[in-house]
Length: 306
Image (tube, rainbow, N blue to C red; front, side, top):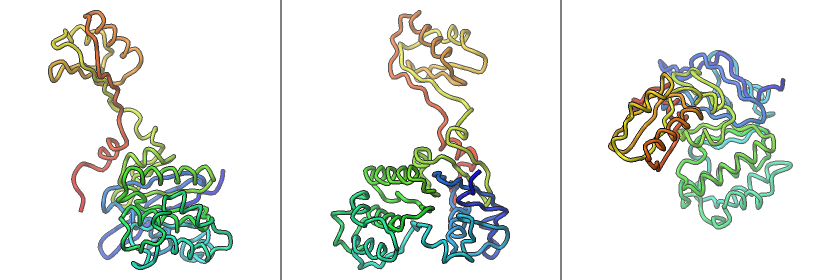
């Protein structure tokens, strides 16, 4: 078994009376994309700062590529790329010049022109950083994080402020990194982003890990829905009698039918056969499964966090 790219054991960090991280256990497999999820105040930012070596834990241990992020910072710095949630560049610096300058600090950087093209920065070459949109600034920051050919990349809200085109450009970049064997630790509030990119997901709250697994593992189980439109006031009682225990059908509003419960091909066959027996043409038939957002809200609650 390969050494994890990141491993935290019994990790704790407090700021005064606030226990930001409280006995956290996290493992990030090498060569994977792992998403770190949690509501505001859950401890995500503190966990990333510990991984980046900006602060030291009060208790427990954290290792990145087998090294201590603080004690071994000089060895780790060339091997780790970081995209911070905010800041990082002087307001007057020009976008492509910044990427080129950082590239000059590495022995074997990615050619800046390659990253400029891949991240759609060509038209921003002479634009001062302060005049870039939020999404454009994120793409410049990502280029700087990747120019040193890191083995491990930490991305904190990488698509914040981006339009759909920019988001998909970043998503494609993250997928290419994984294909090249680079480990990516991704923190995001966008559940569709985590579900689209992550091999593994770690959900934390109140400074502790409360769930982990692949997107498929976390969204497995729970009720599913099959919805369709047909002629109103069909005799749903006859379909209910044909459905397995635990599967129900309701008509609400008129002409819109919803089948709830564990779905399988036999349930779908029963529904279509029932419609055919009543000479009812269906439309807008959809199967809706539990999403990662559903799971996240079940785990962390629906109340707003400060």
